Length: 216
Image 1: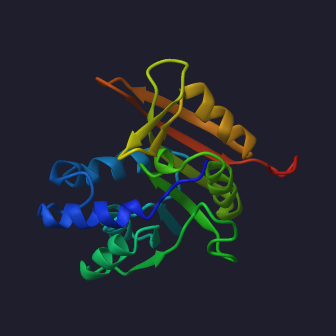
Image 2 (image 1 turned 135 degrees about the horizontal axis):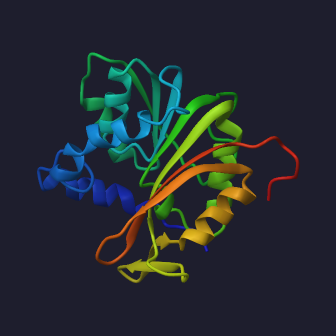
């Protein structure tokens, strides 16, 4: 199974038509500083260097991280989202790139001290998830940290949701997600689950393992 990621252009257009400040509505965008604080409060997370945000949308987390002194690149599969991010001027420079992280070799030659998945991974489907996480491994510096913020299932069964008759999101069980990271040679440092009505939400911090086995 591979995703139809072109759907996100239409969804970002819809968000703009609603007058939202970004993907998910204004309350989600307003929670950006809390999300950044959650990441940076960990003692093992770097407080300077290069940051990559996966699925950056209109760039609110990128701008907040740039304001903290990081050199930031944001990537999104939606050109509408990237154009929107570029329209939002900031005193802190951020580079926005339109790219599909489910394809191999994205951002060839670059490495990052911190990679932030701001609710992107649960939008990646099927075999694309292996490519996505292999890209993360390749792009992460030796001492870098990968932060994942993702929907997760309430029990041991992973779930694929539908939208307009097509696969839309993959909501993994906690065990499944942790196994995915292990198979991508991303060693989990810490994780926690926030229980909610419907799907739960997981935060994971991981680091790059030494290359001891071939990636899938």
